[in-house]
Amino acid sequence: MSSRTLSMTDAVHAYLLQVGVREHPALAALRQETAALPAAGMQISPEQGACMQMLVRLLGARRTLEVGVFTGYSSLAVALALPADGEIISCDVSADWTAMARRHWQAAGVANRIRLHLRPALETLDALLGSGEAGAFDFAFIDADKANYAAYFERCLQLVRTGGLVGIDNVLWGGRVIDARHTDADTTAIRALNEQLHADSRIDLVMLPIGDGLTLARKR
Image (cartoon, rainbow, N blue to C red; front, side, top):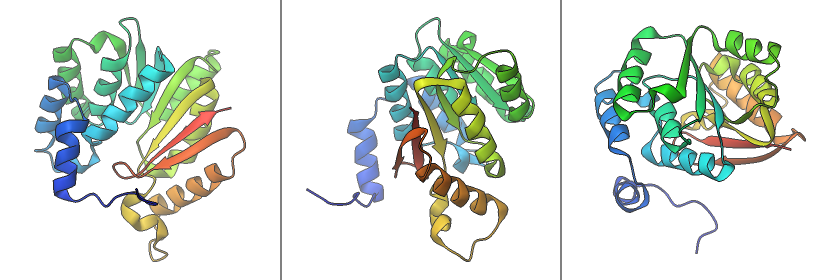
């Protein structure tokens, strides 16, 4: 027994991946290709992808949102967990990174479940709200520019149904959130959102020490 989370050494992490994650071959292939990129650290971990798949299945999700795609690991993980008629609306601004994502979505046979919008995410989210889509989604995942996290969260909370879930990545930010010496815009934005969510009566809340920190907010 332990009263706190176990320290994750490389050996323990390797064991976790060996016996605790059933990574789809398509996800493994995408992860391997992404590892060669200078920005590879932006990709979520296999165990976080598996966690999101479990959540999507438990929710019985059919319609989901994603703010921030990068090379498409999180969207591919979610798409593989959705039913055949499920849908992800994914938001990003990089044609280069999402070109890799599209290739792997296609290879995995789930490209028809993912609608990619290449424009600022707030424009897409506002358009969805403007067209009457409030409460129409089961799950949303936010992993994009940190300065807009609060704005993304407010819109996603409107777009998910009661009982739906919003996941927010990088909430521990490599530990910088507790270091007062870090006053840059991204760190400040994450700190502010963490404190805001802790006091938000509209949601049930848990912050998980998975990857770089994952907050789950259930809409009451």
